[in-house]
Length: 254
Image 1 (cartoon, rainbow, N blue to C red):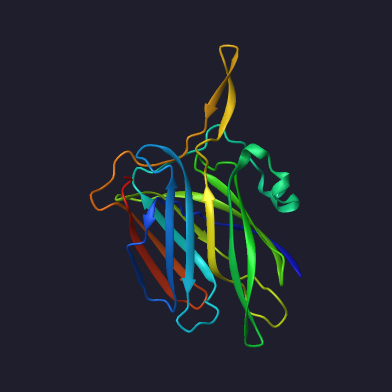
Image 2: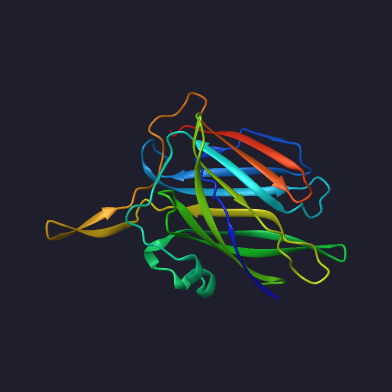
């Protein structure tokens, strides 16, 4: 069973450190670990994120339907010089259809579905690319691929939003229900991880008739850190109409 779905999604970008607090009124909770490499104020960096959902009942969590994330003020994302991948091309041809210099990251995770009372785990992969900007705002395309026991491929267009201080950049996304196998539940998420950005990424630009190697800034750590760390937050709603508010601070570099 194969499905191809195109949805709008926002990728939540944060910094380094551990979750400080998570406040929930949902039937499940979320924990996460986020790191910068390198971890220096004002440096171009790669962001690694690991997240897990937990259901107190031990069953399949309700599918996520919407997430709005708010990131620390001062965090920048500058993709000037990166290649561009078209969403239709990605959906039809997969990651191989995108220009190599449009790749922004990679990752994967584990999905869950329930069939005849049995909880089944399903791995998926995640590939991230720079998409065409909209109104001068960042768009990141994500290709989610699962093959067994259910098969589905989802192209996600991540759109940038902005929030008031103490936050800055933000992102939001809505997720459709994803059918899996006949008689089984819709797909849920157990865990996900990804790395976004590469401080080594660069391109050649002709300046005064000569080629010059120019580094893509990508994700840039804020130049200063509040005394208690970088604050961030996420609002998550689920298919069972429950919701979760997730807040934390990111430890200051060094």
